[in-house]
Image (cartoon, rainbow, N blue to C red; front, side, top):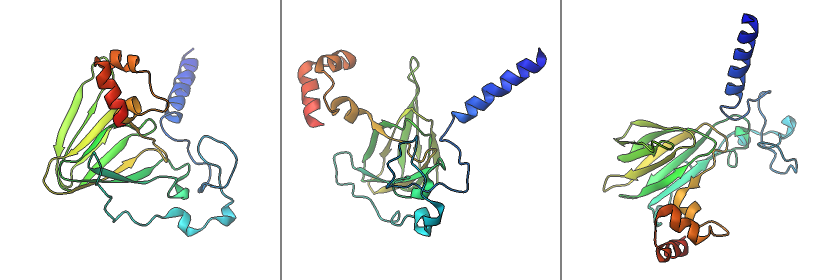
Length: 215
């Protein structure tokens, strides 16, 4: 009986580990084959004999992103789409540039946790826990400070200075995905019926229609 309990306990822990992140690699590397028609959870592997050193590198992260937009920020992503060699490795990177008082609006990464480091300037950051608590954790970070956003939770950043700010974030997925809350709610294709949004956000229908027109 004791051995059975031990076996099933070990099995449960194994499943928990297996589901915690991207699939583990079973070989040295699995460089993504962008030309493959095979559909898998991730990307098919390129023939190792065709792999080149450039499959493992990316240039340009030293360049500032263009923050001339409505929210005043720009993310430069380095995921498997930019570095095919990231396929199956379970990591990616992003540089985020912020104009003075610019924001990275509330969003979530459905497939990865995030650890963010402030490179220049100061940022107000925060995330909200799941229902029913909906608890806000928020902090002002300065250059060199690090903050973690748990997987799937809505989070944001705001530049709290009059100069530009820069952050580098690492994520625990080769393709963490991003869902920006306002864009998803008011800018989906096709649109979410306005009466649903009226009830969900307790807004007047004219306000919902206006917001949908903005996105």
